[in-house]
Length: 358
Image 1: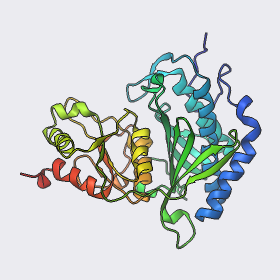
Image 2: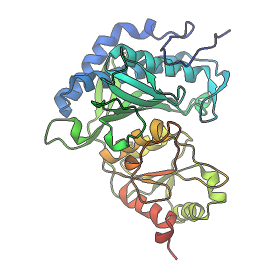
Image 3: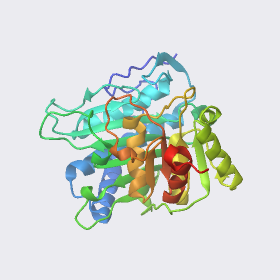
């Protein structure tokens, strides 16, 4: 019988689902390859940030092992703050991230969808390290069908005065990343211009775990979203039943013969747009189908990936980049639209009252 894991931010490893036996020996080579790529090819010179991103790369490698070796998909009997039933796997993945960031020594505070409190992960509480918001396993509801799933990470800088995650905006992130676990294990990183040497533009890139899981290799040097792209992924589709504007927008996409690409997982659906270089992802809400995406754990980090790739983001009901929405609550939720700039503009025409077509 699988022992019940605890999501307390300690990073404790499940005795029945160890990843260090498989992954431990290659840790140095993975860290060296990823930090070398970011330093030499993308102008990231902040050693602490290189260490932080390498730690998330390690968490990604460990989660990939957990997913490969997990056969049972059993529930713990608890729910996270979002009301989702928690799998043992959710908590094991959560602990894998906490273990990696604690070992790195460059993070001070972290909060996750599964551990939704500001948890001290450094040696002290002086806010000398980075702040992290993350979703360790996005798509756990579709994992039993063996669909691709992912992890989401947003990194905020420390400040000279005591300040946690609350009150920040996504615009302040020094980097963000998503991991995708499918036939390959990939790590997609957004590096805003203020996190690299002068003269470097904001970049979204992809690296892939290769050579029997011992190294990261650049697989897409620069991911860019074109202005147009007739591919759509309509999240929270049930909201179209009582959100008339959303219903009209869905009908527009169908009438204009857009290609549907939707799995039910935010990471694979947004990632599809990044890989193809075009498209639009929406997740609107209604009175009967409330917003589910969390600003801290999902929206802000993915928003940075999209905007660093030249795309556009907006709040579902007002013309505001998701990167400019203050994080007022760790469980704060909102509807969104991400993607190609012209496609997001069409979303706004239908969804914002002042812009709706006749």
